[in-house]
Image 1 (tube, rainbow, N blue to C red):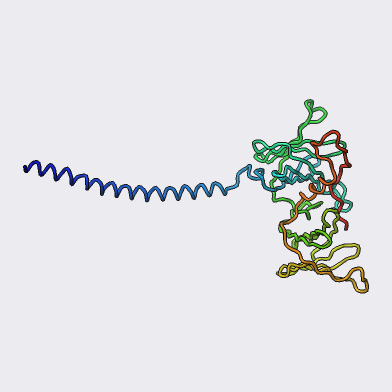
Image 2 (tube, helix red, strand yellow):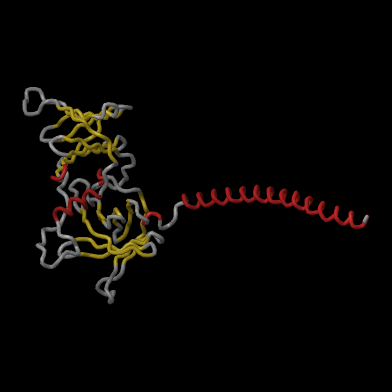
Length: 302
């Protein structure tokens, strides 16, 4: 009986000790597991936020600055991968005459392994290029016989999307703002205090007027716009208004105040949107009437 009672006591007391031990071990393991999971989630978030070589080509709007040729020349391309659109531009060789300035629109044909293949509309037809976002290079494919046209590869730098104010400008416009006003149709003002540049666009007409920023404060930005006659224009952030000062003695040009709102800064992609209204798509039917190609937008009047 004594041996039986000892055996019975051991039989029931040992599992209770084991259950407490397992409970303690499970608690410690769960705590350690939670810490590990938090670390893994944090690491995953860091890896997700880290830029990757192909992030520029993943879907957002971006530009590239490339240089090539003999003598070396700068050129730029702005991509909208989602819209399959591209705008190619070269700044002027001569700043006084604007000689050499060009703007061409095109379409992205394919995107594979970080390579964006696109076609540009040129006279008399089209030309294909390839941007490699991994190697940061622009390739101008050549002919099978390089005697006549060798393949060219130029180094590039990925940049934020070029502002519409960047047209014809080598240096980047870093902090532009754009406002949209409803005044006999949509109109836009884009301005940049650092470069002192300003641009007025009249909706679908594609007509633009250049100007300059004459003063920039915390609330107001004052512009001098070269309309048919110079006009003083003030953008008020707090009131969300554009005020166009009138001209004394000219009843046709009174003081005008219009309600506006700030919108995402307008980029060089506006040239592509304008070209879509003027040109036949690259992959259109042969029966479609071909329209005149060339500059996709009127030159901004000065």
